[in-house]
Amino acid sequence: MIDGMSIFVGTVGSGVHVSRDGGGRFKQIFKPVPFEGNVRALRVDPTDPATVWAGTDAGLFRSGDGGARWAPVPSIAAGRPLWSIAIDPTDPRRIYVGAQPGAFRSTDGGATWQEMAIPVVEECLVGPPRTTNVVVDPRDPAVVWAGAEIDGVFRSEDHGATWTRCSDLGPLPLNGDVHGVAIRPDQHGDGATVLVGGPFGLTRSVDEGRTWELRHFPGFHERNEFAYCRMVMVKADDPQTIFVGTGDSIPGETGGLRISRDGGRSWTLAELPEEPNSVVYWMANHPDRPEVIACASLFGQLFWSTDGGDTWEKCRRGFGEIRSLALAPTVTVSA
Image (cartoon, rainbow, N blue to C red; front, side, top):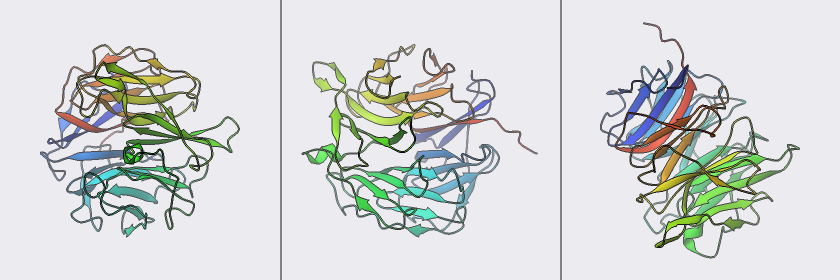
C-alpha cells in the first residue's frame, strides 16, 4: 500500500473507485457519478488535494473532500463525453476540460463555462475528434496545449481564448492521433520539449511545435514492429524523468512502461511484477509525493511504485477497463 495517499481510478462501465488508504480497500462511488458510467478523466486540484474533478460521459463532477462525496458541475458540454481536465496551478479557478468534440474553460472555479475555439476538424477517421489532452504549460500558465484524436496538437498563448494549430506531427493522418501530451521544461527554465504519445511512438518538439521528431520504441512481437504509445508523464519534481505507457496496440494483448532518466535520450522498460495484459493506458503522480507513481493497463491492472519507478507492486484489486488515474495525499473527511 501507499501510506498517506488516496488513489482514484476512473473506469469504463463502473464509474469511479476511490481508495483512501493507499490501495488497501477501494470504494465504488454510486452517486451522483453514474456507478455504471464511463470516467475518462480525473484531476486533483494542484493547490488543494481535497478537490478532485471527474470527467465522464454524463458530465463533470467534483469532490471537495478527497473523493468521499461528489456533486455534479452544471453548465458544461451537455451531451458530450469528457476526455481530459487541466487546472492552472497558479489560479485553480481556471479549469480546462476536453470533450468529444471541442473543449471548455472556466475562470470562476466551474461556476460558468465557455466553449473554446480550438480549430479541430468536425470529423476524423473515427468520427467527431476527442480532445484527449489539455495541458497548462509549467513555464507560463497563459500557454495551454491541447491534443486531439487524429487531428494533432494545438496551442494557446492567452489562457485558451485563441488557438493555433501546430505543424503536422508526420506525413500520415495517424501521426496526428494524439494520445498523450506532456511538457518537459529544460534545465534553464525558458525552453521546453513538447512530448506527444501516438500510435507509432513518441513524437517530440524542441521549438514550440513548429517541427517534430518521432522516436520509435521496439514492438512486443513480430506482428508489432513499433510499440503503440499512450500517456506521457514527466515526474513532478524531476523533468529529466519521463514515463511513457506502451503496448502492442489498443487495447492490445500486452504492454509496458518505458522510463527515461536523462530527458528522453535513453529508455528502459520498467520491471513490473506482472506482464501488463493490454496497453499501459494511464499514469498518475502528485507533487506532494513525487516518488509515488501509479500506472494502469487498460484491462484493469493497477501498479504503483514508492521509489520513483525503480521498483513496483501490483494492487491486489483488479478492475474492468481503466481509463484514468489520480493520486493525492489523503485528507481527513468530516462527518
